[in-house]
Length: 218
Length: 218
Image (cartoon, rainbow over all chains, first blue to last red; front, side, top):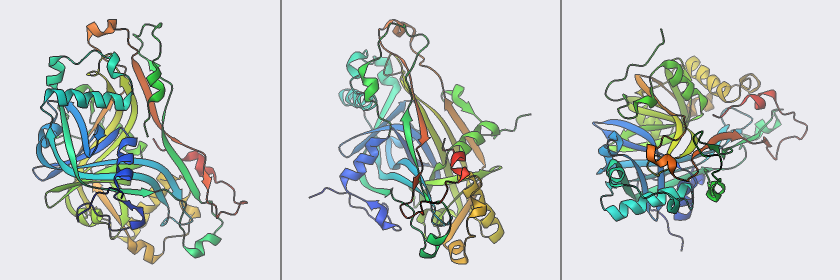
């Protein structure tokens, strides 16, 4: 049986239900495909949305930052948080403005974040971050020193509930509009990596590591 | 004199101030470069973050959706909203995990959204959306009909305050780490358009319009 998140009112997708998915496989694949999440939180009734690098292990989403970060101080105490990861996959040009749309994959996950205080757990989380971005790089880096570990806050948010929303198809026009002499279709969009740009201070003899070829961004 | 947003406590960037910008030119350029915004809002103390297409005119950010949208119903009444637009520009591989980073351009804007009720204003806003995405397409589309206009909610959020945060440079390592024999540099990331994919139902004789070459996504 496929594992799924069970949405309450909060996460359930009400409109365009053909776009909704709650199974772990779809939700996790969308979370894992990207590096950037938008984290929503509330301070004194005011919503804030902060973009940050995220990573996942099982049903837990992690992110990190400076120990002085307003976002991390605000949410580390276990207040409700919303984490949204969105991939913009294309522009859908229908034969009307009304049916024109966007192709995308998006996950909205809800939960409460806790600060990772245990040193071993924190190091394991930072290793997972580095390995998510550059698989194989962690062993070649010097270990973080005590000052760096102290200056870094890592938070973990067990997913209480989550929903994925996906649109990945061609235009869906009104029947009468198919007769219009308009171009219709999809302009695909992708996040792409360019050629690595070595640090100007890099010794030119330093070889480019294999893991540069294993980086994926969407 | 350069026009700037004046940040209060809410929008002021406290850390990494060399990344902070408040001038209209920088803020607007980052908003305008992308199509996708993440909108944060609060319902009963719970934060929600929803990705949506946005566009801008002067100091006002617009977005739209179904009249039945939970997000638009929740925010159309003038509650506090946070709109964040983020462009992921690169992965910064420093000589330590601690100094590794992300290059990005991000704007966080705060305000309250109102529903655009006036018919002429609503049509002008929808035209601006179509023209933002596909410059020159609006005149070739049939006008929206009454049912479509009714089924669409457009909201406008005058920017009360906003801050841009930009990191766009090479690794900044600890002095001692420059001696490490590690590759360091930037892996640039860009959102790119692929070749247009015509709708399978398109008459093959339909020419690809010029505006397909004027679409920009980041």
